[in-house]
Length: 410
Image (cartoon, rainbow, N blue to C red; front, side, top):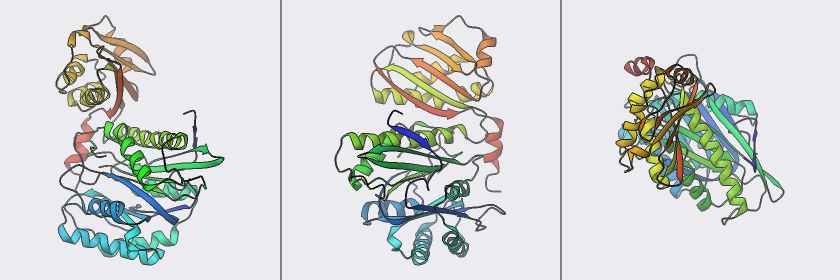
C-alpha cells in the first residue's frame, strides 16, 4: 500500500460522480431497491462479465455498451429481480430503462449501463423501474453519503453494504478510485451473484482501463467462492471520467502501475467483503497456497479448498479436520507430492500446524478449535514444490445457508 491511501466513501469519492438510492417497490417493501451512479462528464468504460452460458439481459446490454458505445455516463441498478431468462422482453426492458434514464439525465441511451440482481425468470415491473429512475435522478448528489446509500440499495441477501475508496498521487495530481459491490449467495465468479461498480477520476485510455480490470479480477473476484454457483448476472464495471486532471495514462509505466495497485486494492477489498458476507456465514475463510509450481496452479489449489463443502462445514464446526483440506487439494487437478504438504491454520487466537509432510502434526485439538472459532480464519498450505503463491476467500457453510436458499423466492 505504499503508493495508495484509503479515503472516505465509495462510488462518489472520485471527482464528478454522483449517486442515489430509491425505494421502487420492485420486490421488497419499505426498503431501497434501486441505485444510480452518474458522472457529470462522459467516461471511458471497461467491464468483465459472467462466463455462464445463461447471461442476463443487463449483462448482454452492458457488454454491448462497453464494446461498442463511445462512452458511458450512468449506471442504473435494481435489486430483487435479476432480469435473467426473460427473453426478448428482458432486452426491451433494458432499452426502456436506458431510454428513461437517458431522457431524464439528458445523455444518450447508449451511455447508460444497467445492472440487475435477484430472482431469475421474472420480468421486471418496468413502470416501477421508470418511476424509480425519476426518484433517483431527483435525489442524486455528489455527497459521500449518497454513495453509501447506493451501496445499500443494491443489496439482496447481503447483511452489510460494501464500499471502499482509495487515492494516490501521480504527476502532482490526486487520483481517486472508489467502488461498491453486492454479493452474498450464488457466488463463484468466473469472468471476471456479484455486482461490482468502480468509479475513478483517472484519465486513462480505454484500452489500458480494460486491460487493468481484466487482470485485476483474476486475483480478486475470481478467487472468491460462497457456494460454487456462477451467477447469470456477474458483472464488474469501471467508469473513468478523467476529472483528476492527470496526464492521460496511455502506456504502461509508473502511473499505470499505481492505478493498477489502487484498482486491485479496491477489487480485493470488495471481493473479501462478499466472501465474508456469504449467506448464513459466521466466518471469512482465507486460503493461502505457498510454494506452488506456478501461479495458476496456486490459484486452482486455493480455490479448490475454499470451494470444498466439507472444509467449509468443518470451519463452521470449528473442527480441525485437515484431511478435508488435503483431500480438496488432491482433487483440484494439480499434480503434487502429498508427502511434502504442510497445512496450518491461524487467526487472531493464534496459529497451529495441523499437517506436516502429509501426515498429522503434533497439535492441540483444543487450541485448534479456539483458532477456528474466530470470525476470520486463514488456512496456509505449503506445497513445497515451487515458488509461486495465491490466496482465495470463502466462508463457512451453515444451516442458515440452506434456510435462506430454500425459500429465496417467497
